[in-house]
Image 1 (spheres, chains in turn red, blue):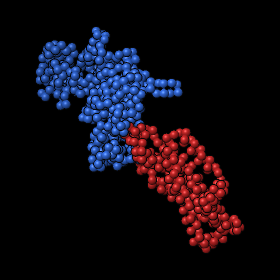
Image 2 (cartoon, chains in turn purple, red; image 1 turned 180 degrees about the horizontal axis):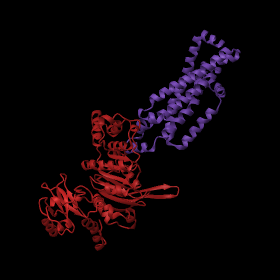
Image 3 (cartoon, rainbow over the protein chains, first blue to last red; image 1 turned 180 degrees about the vertical axis):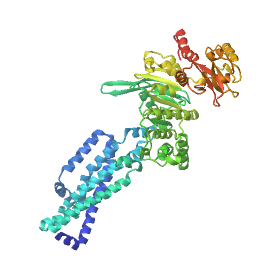
Image 4 (cartoon, chains in turn cyan, yellow; image 1 turned 60 degrees about the vertical axis):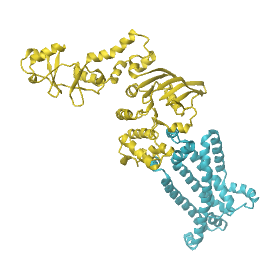
Amino acid sequence: MDWIQYAVGNIDLLLSRTIEHIALVGVAVGIATLTGVPIGIAITKNERLAKAVLYVASIIVTVPSIALFGIMIPVLSLIGQGIGYLPAVIAVLLYSQLPIIRNTYTAINNVDPALREAARGIGMSQNQRLRMVEIPLAVPVIMAGVRTAVVLNIGVMAIAAYIGAGGLGTFISRGISQSDPRQLILGALAVSLLAILVDYSLLALQKRLTPKGMERAAFAE
Amino acid sequence: MIRLDNLTKVFDTPKGAVTAADHITMEVPAGEICILLGPSGCGKTTTLKMINRIVRPTSGKVFIDGEDTTDLDTQELRRNIGYVIQQIGLFPNMTIEENIAVVPKLLGWDKAKYKERARELMRMIALEPDAFLKRYPSELSGGQQQRIGVARALAADPPVMLMDEPFGAIDPINRAVIQDEFLKMQQELKKTIMFVSHDIDEAIKMGDRIAIFRAGNLEQYSRPDELLANPKDDFVESFLGEDRALKRLNLVKVRDMASEDVGTVAPDEDLQAALMRMDDHGYPGSIMMVNDRRQPVGVVQRSVARTTKGYCRDHFDTLPAVARLDDDLRKVASLMFAHDMTWLPCVDDEGRLCGQITQRAITHHLGSRYRVQQAEPVAEV
């Protein structure tokens, strides 16, 4: 149980790396939400475009993160950012697109056609329909996509330590290179624990954002 | 007033063009309910939805209150037409109040005004405002939800309403209640309503006029009584059903048929007088006895009057049933069959006698239209 002593001894470092980790994932998934949700909504208007976009997003997720970092090094080196913060954020941003776009697309598409017809029939414009009916109804499913992205990418971000992005992955990479199981275990446990805690707090947020009248329907399963 | 002028919809399908509505021309006068009736796929719903452009017409025009709607902005047009659909379509993310206030909000009413309007509508549909306005649709029963659906359509007080099988998904008992409530509201609101149904009984009950559709064509457009008495062709006749003569019973009120000439006896008259009065009026079996407030209280049988001496008050049978002026003939006929009577006394709201109705008169009324039809085969609306 050496790693506990190590953790207690390095509590400040552990905290600052945790915050670093959260900030990296937070910024990346935040930007991904801002891009993914509009894309998800936009592609509901065109089925062929939707297929293409979802296909590309699926392919991106199949690229191993370590390979993705490798690809970005020469590209981003052109602006002097080959390693570190920027490629880490970009990778997470890309990985986050699939769950967020797909969930948004599915949620908007699955809005009951009767509601859409009622909304049209009483004279809502397309934007009003989105704002007053479709997006509020889609929020729980969109949030579920964001949660998936966050949890997935807390893991991905651990690997970004190898390109010098910092975060909790640093404990793991040092643990391996220095053959120090204390750092290795601490890093692995901290990443897992962080993923679980963040998942629960986002679930709570998702429940808060769910329109009141839909609580029963949204969390029935 | 709604007027359709050669309204046509052609759908392009992989199998070629399908004409869902073929040059539909008809007019619904202001304040009337017109039922679009027909089997599924006959074009009734398409026709309805072309009025608020949920389905865009291929050609033809829609006039509302005399105004050609072709050049109106679609959203503007829809906000001035109440729309009720079978699936109800209340927004689950909004409270009942928000649902009802949607159209007034879109129209830019101020908050106090649409809040008051929501309360007013709740009272109109007989749901307690304080108990329901802050709740969500999922907390309400189907019948309550559809009442809210109707209230939402009425919120901005549109002159015209479109209803697409609005009560089709509600269980039969609640459906009858909601239909009655709606008719009562309509008596005051006098909206011009197009109403799609596939239920002939609903059409007869709700409609001032009925338009029968078949394969995209308007087959017959008549008042319900005319339609039942005088179907235009075999299709309409078979669609109305073989009991269409009986269905007409729904349409006639006791008020329209009661004969005012009715002989009665008083409790303190003797049986001899009763017998003479039966003969005077030609009653074969019995005569009614009324009290001093002219309320029917019993029946004196001819057989009793002939063979017995005494006063009516000691020798009468109780009256098993009476018909009220606002009852329809279907109920009256049912009462007659149930109690084995050939006539019933008609009473007003205070229970006073104001006439009688006989099986003969009912049969005669139903039959007279057919005889007119036979004499004049070209009878047209």
